[in-house]
Length: 334
Figure 1 (tube, rainbow, N blue to C red):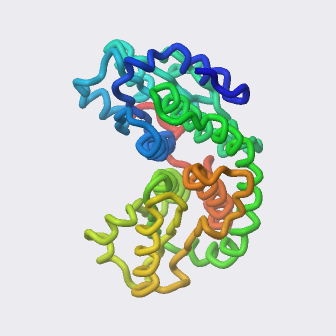
Figure 2 (figure 1 turned 90 degrees about the horizontal axis):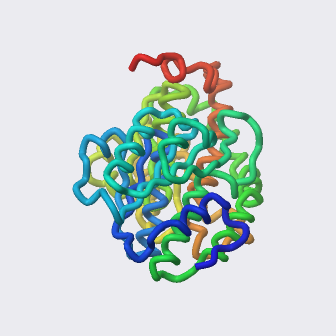
């Protein structure tokens, strides 16, 4: 199988070395924000391919030790810095079991990069402050891996339309900043005063809701949060809803959008509009993005634009982003 020239060269090298005919299972493994991209990756693989897959927290992956892990399985791992000890340990564990491993990181010479069979470098603007092209992001890289696997294992070869879409993604993100800017102005001061903000999404976008809850609201701003699946909302969590509760709802464009629409209707029925921040992907300009992948790229747009929002919130709270953390990157004995 020949992959498009614009595919990441390390992705192409890794995929060309995998025995696609013998591939029987894929494991997506990481922690925290890196784990959040594994959910949309599995969603894409489920919708386009026939190879079974699972998403695991890295430490539980090792502790659970799936019996099917071994030759004929692929483990895709991610750690931005490559220093997440649980993820590096998971890579080592997987290789010892005979699995093939691919590691995504901004530092290929990191512990994770050295622990995997194939290290793939991506770029991240959130901790460096340096703008990037979204085609070089972790989302883009893992989508290239997934659709490359789909094509190699007998599925439809959509690698061309995928990379075309990813090359147009940054322009869509830039336009989204303009689309959502009025929302940031409307909600930032009010949300800055909150002690609890729930996030909600489904399908490909659930990972973005998860990451925004634990890695941004909780980690960066010490605001209590919980990522709630849009349908799971109706199986218990909706009992917390009243006119004082705050939610961020991400309404995607994939096949699960009706779940988000149902949640949106209920939130506005029993909640208060000023407490419900809705990011509706239907309002985005996604020119240049193939319709088959619009639902998949929306989570990255959501998460990227929400970083603009949280900096406004942080200013009102006078809570420094990143450097203001108490434990992360400050302690080494946990």
